[in-house]
Length: 468
Image 1 (cartoon, rainbow, N blue to C red):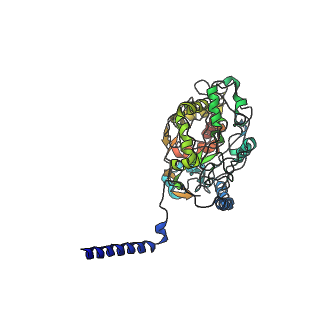
Image 2: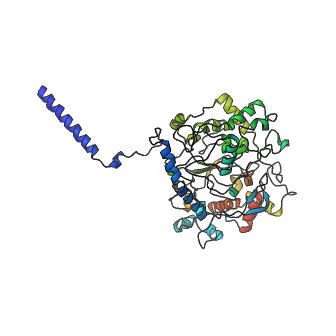
């Protein structure tokens, strides 16, 4: 028996040895990390090495993104005469998406989706817009916002690995106006300033109640985020206090800071993100990039716990996630956000329709197109011009799946119906910034929905949308 056990033991050891040798002999690919939904928690590269490597690659990354923008769009500065945002910034005009050579918008709109797809005629500017560095992702802020926050707080939002990409003239005015539902008599209460932790009290003490004032303080308080935190896993040169809600939703509006949605994997399928305004948030009912959140309280609580960290609660714990108290802090912040109103629309009546005594003939015709032939009102009913639902436009009918600067353009999926009130104040458009002007947006939906508007109908529709 002992002899038998000895030989069995030797056999087991030999088998183990064979297995070990076999594993060692495997191709290095066998040791590669499998695809994962999680970010790496333990960073094994020295931070200085990471920063030097990424900073060295920055210029090539940005050149590639800027080349893509130039290929897709006319990026020149062409303001509309006599049309401005609330505080006077010029609104850009014209279709900026470039057509395939020899094609016209009329011919394209007359073609069936299958033909456009097979012939590769779908305008590149209608494809999903990649993040400035899609493989890396994360929050990226326009330079004018970075400079203002650095000036006021000494908090530097510069990333060493990438910069913001879209030209400033296609972005919302800065700083944006602030209108309050509780004090419409005051008009714009921003005093032409960017609201931060340094000035919120002097600007709003006496206008807000104590609960709302505390909510505003929290909205302008920096908290750790995926790229801006105090660990070695960051994209700022120095350890960082983090970002604020108002770093994207500046003055309760937006500066069009971009990010990637946190709820899609793998990375190449994640959608780019345009920061939506908080104006009129009180009438909205769907929040978060996949609209899984149903109240502004839900959005406030989970934004910092999820979206700030790319939807990864494991990495959030490491980097210092700020856990808000639902019964007090979340409530205060949500109540403050619900006060941000749409900008005035002097040509609209109480039902959200044009007053014939104030509107031009073109604007009145555009309203008729909006509620009629274009079918816009089926998703964007007055007075706020949203149905608070999601709709899948099935854009994949028009193009073959393709990789663009690290972004896999395959489909858009369901898209939230955003309110159109204040539309001219909040470019660029669609959920990922791909449409630079209202004219681009009209051409996009004219093609996608197949309503076949005439050139005059498009112009009139644009004129109406600028009234909202």
